[in-house]
Image 1 (cartoon, one colour):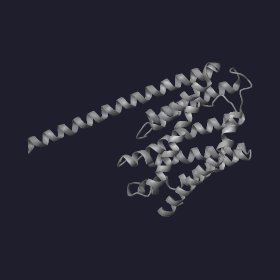
Image 2 (image 1 turned 90 degrees about the vertical axis):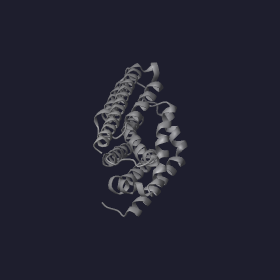
Image 3 (image 1 turned 45 degrees about the vertical axis):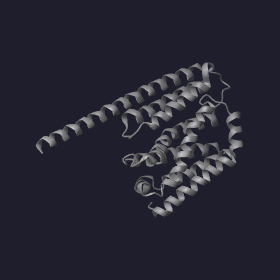
Image 4 (image 1 turned 60 degrees about the horizontal axis):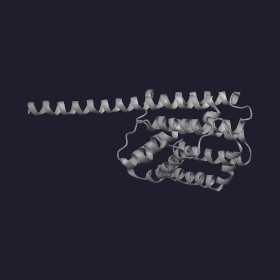
Length: 265
């Protein structure tokens, strides 16, 4: 499906406004649902800062998408995926409001697929300036890390509780979900073609937030979370070291080529 660039950007903007408005109007309801549905994959209050930053950056994208440097990314990579994603998130909020929890779960899976598909296409583009990097590349890299976390957290909030205690199947399931998130974060950090590590960093910080929230009262989740966080920090450090080494090697090669050309001249 190919849309005119102006129409595509307009849909991106207005569906973003729609999802933010829906979340704002239902903020009290969402807060009450979170409070009334404790589960073994819920994160601490501080953990909500990361999604908030992501939504802020996406808001910046809906404005910067109109600039020339973002045109090709919007048309060739983002396409219709973003505005359909925004519609899916809007419908997800309403699914909780009207108690269609299974539908809500399916909507978040759809959203994860859309954002993953979008990011795979756009990661081949290189940022041309700081605004491009922050609002186009960082925003969708963070979002790619957060969407699968949304899928798991929504499932545990909608269909599990803490009545079975810290040794229940729900707690063990939460630990297993963290391992899956670890695998996703490690993939984005060390094995994918991602141009940066923001996806892995987002997953690492959210896992830490879950571990802190569950605490010593749920040891299987706390320990799994801390080990997974430590693993991802190590992976992020290795990637940073490799990036510095690569940059240093390229700089050295450029200097060497320049010196050889000077001698020949």
